[in-house]
Image (cartoon, rainbow, N blue to C red; front, side, top):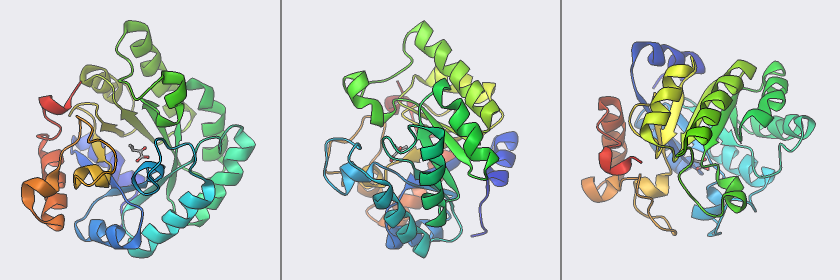
Length: 263
Ligand code: KIV
């Protein structure tokens, strides 16, 4: 597999070529995903739930994410590797720079932050200092206590308009990828058309440029419940590698996510 950069994702968006991505937390899966030519891999703070067994992601530290980023990078040199900035690690632009540097030194190609317009200065500060940023909108799991649970976001008119504005603003501030989690499919499609940067969706319908799944959901082995928007590819194929290649194929063809996975 050739090394994937943001330029490949931008070219694919222009060509209308859809791409898959997945979370990973260790070298063995990092390698397996590289062998299957997974273009983008995320070291997600979902590790708090799927590896540490917590009810949310809030207890995950920068050190945890640096450790798992180093591990995935050891097995995978070619995928574009994004790493989450954990809860409160980007409360100020200065803290964001310091903590992002730790994650970039561990092997990340890009960091991911959860939040809207209020992050514009932070995104600008990071990108001007050579840290590429993915902006995560919609259901941002670090805000679970503000939302009162893991709920679909952007259902009403005002919230949807705000999300479109946030995506445009964050892309203008320098965000190179927008990630949308648990938003209605038509809103995700609108945002995908409104910005020039690639948009990756999870629980956001099949009109985004890319898709992402938590690997434990894709294999049906999550300690927590299986989200409605996910699909158990291991059950369907009976083999880890075939599960991954089937997921990549279905995303490229636009057949995953289907209507049953869309809000
Ligand atoms: O932490 C994570 O795994 C994520 C994905 C759900 C996109 O942010």
